[in-house]
Image 1 (cartoon, rainbow, N blue to C red):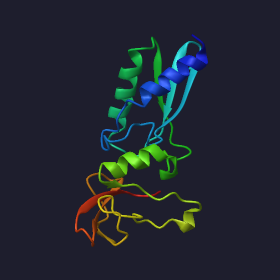
Image 2: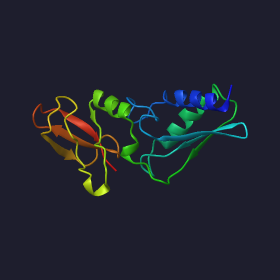
Image 3: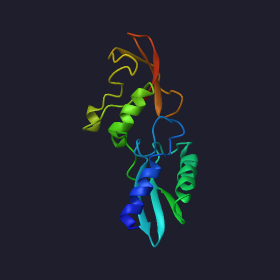
Length: 160
């Protein structure tokens, strides 16, 4: 196998690693998995947490290492904080999966000053009539919102 083929296989396996706090999406969908390289026969995966103090990072590192070790003999998982993760790294597929799971994905930012900081629509009914209930939801990276049309509460992945 060529290194390129092996890297493609590693990415395919990474796409199977769910985020422990948002299991509807993988570490690839969220943009946490940043890079895959071969370095002297070692598979090196670079990941970046959604928050520098994300409590799920140890679990993510272990899940990535465990799954990749089933296919590769030597695996290293590196965590990097710079550049910091941004919600812009969530893939379109990841945004769709979040919405399908009833979690409002953040909007795509063009410039930080234009960031709205609120859901574009309710993931249940599609209404833009939403209100924030709490700045933090079930995890630090989410806020709790409610649709004023269908009255359903939902998590929102905070844009940053």
